[in-house]
Image (cartoon, rainbow, N blue to C red; front, side):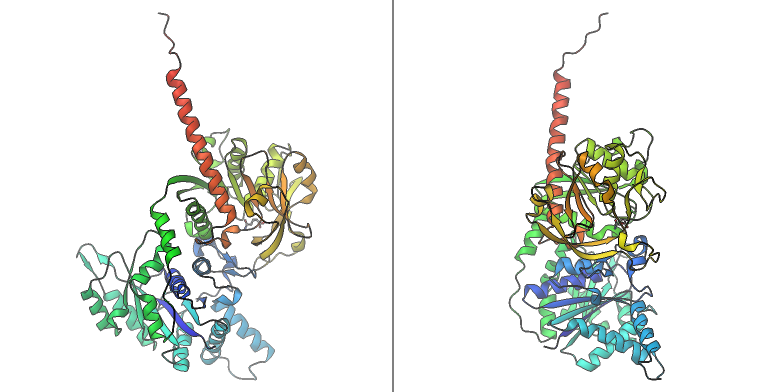
Length: 557
Ligand code: GLN
């Protein structure tokens, strides 16, 4: 089977939602029974985003095969059933790394190695590799048309059209149609300029997805069509929505999938969007609310916890709840005495997510101590599990200086220490325990009740682990190790049986949660938080009533 290709480019400004557009097109094609795969190309020189700051680049998404990839791959997995691996995310750095390795080996037989054809050939080969076994490959080109860095990629997709022809390739361009308040008008000029830029590179877009805050009138569509040389029906209103899960519905209403099928001459069945409609219905019709406090280092920039935010949302949708997420700067909880407790009082559940480095650790410890003592549902992910172990060691087992060697290399109680297999490895890039690993669950535990299974596979990204030398002490004091690797080497899940819901996992379950398949750990945590919220509010009302009915003290004078 020879696959067809949809190339998604972006113009005018970044952050127009190209990744979501690509994912939504994939989703729509799947609902019509077409097998798709998706690929992201990032024009930067880093080999992968693994070493990039989540402040700058957002979350690092991890695939089953342990690739550290762009967060758009998370959208692809949440919207489709595509199986993604390191082959689905390429950067300029990785393409060049391969070319230079070949050149050093002498593979080019003395030729001069050039951008065209050597770099473009490498890019095309990468695309063709993941297009095997699917009907349609959707390739998202990162960056904005006009950037110097993305030129080789745009040249490669131009060549693909020439090689494969019109019925095998489709160019979708995501652009911006801003509403200018002063003129009270939608402006088409930025789109015209962006398409002109694409045309100058030899690419004529077939479909324009116009990001806008209102529906485009027929008049505006005609104008854009005329100036950009596309069919009127292919000028699509990509209107802003409240929930990302609405995008496939909006696209389907605008006929994007029908257009794609027609342009690519694909036969497909009627689409079935019932499940997505159901999800969106739930988003708009919650039965109640739940409020979660996330205590982390990178609170200023939400993209650094993209999958986590989505997974919590899936958990809330599973219970038909509206989710309020409050990001709490961990350092703000590093107060003298227990003043920090005031900040934590109004949460139905507390979560400490993954993270690296020392900043904010003491604040996270305080938050976990509060959750443990006050019986507030707690969910610790990766770093959040490690700190829960340290907190338990310090305040329950009396090992006051317990720590992770990541934060205090000289600690006398190395409850968390560097992964045994990484001793002596000092490089940062790609040197973690990454990707999917099997975990065995202990029967009868909270983890067992939640998963309903005794063997699971989850994705990892960490450099430190629980030190089994402390197992006996912590377990004797009430901590339960409820999940480990099959050979028993690594601790994967810990919990506190003497608590309504206290669980930490060394892996990142957020990477595997989807709106249509909410991850069990998130569903359970949100459920427990909701119950806690009900209890918390009922207790408050009872306390107020008691105050009200209590006999008033009458002054003796
Ligand atoms: N910094 C910790 C480690 O490397 C936790 C990593 C994480 O939370 N992803 O093990």
